[in-house]
Length: 481
Ligand code: SF4
Image 1 (cartoon, rainbow, N blue to C red):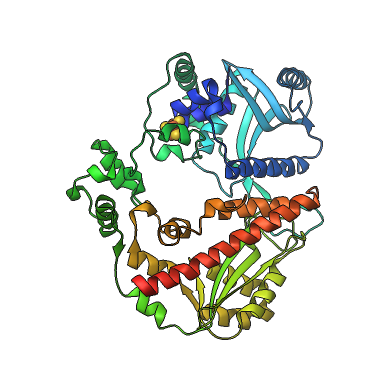
Image 2: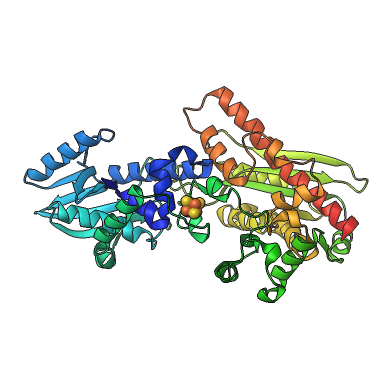
């Protein structure tokens, strides 16, 4: 019996399907993937509350769920079933919401995305094929997804959070392919492990948990490190190139690709002078800031929208002209909306003059959102925005080291200029995605105080590391570039 998720795994990559079934021990599920599952459950729970009178078909006992679903469908009358379990033709599905009114059934596949994606179509198609094969008179099928125009009014009122998009017609061509998929993937599972090379399919549509296993034995500088490699990487792979160091110069056209290629072959950093003088010309005191934000598919604070970037933490390193540094920070783990105190405390920290360094346009975007949310703070925030100096374009223009592996993220740059600021030496929080997951855990009512304190320590250390890294980068640019 092939479950729907196995068929979808097979469509992403037959090797993934094979490993999922025969070597699940090789999977490495990261915190971001676990968080995605968690978000999916939260959205699914809301979808159920919006379908009053629905019956859950034994969530954890498959045989009981199959029997209960069969029983329910055999009985006449209108109904709404959650997690309906149906098997047909070697395929097993659990339908998020299966409703029947006046004899006609409708399927709703609940997704945490804000629109219908291409990869939702085979997902729904497998269910449509199975339901129809099992004798269900299915009239329409929908993807039920988040409406990102929804504004939460509080009190658990989530009516309007989800929107149905009718995909009955769109999934038609894929429904016809299901028998072929069943045959193909049954053969995969009965045979030897398929030989599949790594590529874009390893992260699209989902992060494959077997990337660690599959990347063993890859070259130290695979062609995939070319920034925004897209079609170039595909062409290189089709020409048989795996190692960037073996690619002929003539196959690279973009100046940035050639720059990465040259540095990789030479093993030497590429330094372009000029950015250092721009940084050196800026006055003191200097402020280096970094923000952390959380996005919630299901908003928990009145006045917020799904997936809005809600700032809950900032760090600032204040640098004086004598080179002395002072770190300041804000972190609200109270569970109350942190956005207002975030903005007020930041205004208080940053004073009225001196450059405010960021690393990306993200901080500016969050400030612009704060202007809209708090018009009374608009003038103060606007003055801060006018002082922002984004270090990233300066770093991109001036510096590339082969160990950056095609990336100018601060976490890629820092090990090449200040290896002692190793993010891997931090606690549980070593990157932004983990910061968000940690924050959401910390504000959850069931989180124990000791655990909350541990998360607070990790978040504080992480955000401060980012701003100290920016100080070191600015000094590096002034000295070397
Ligand atoms: S890492 Fe890539 S090649 Fe390996 S199983 Fe996953 S999707 Fe397939």
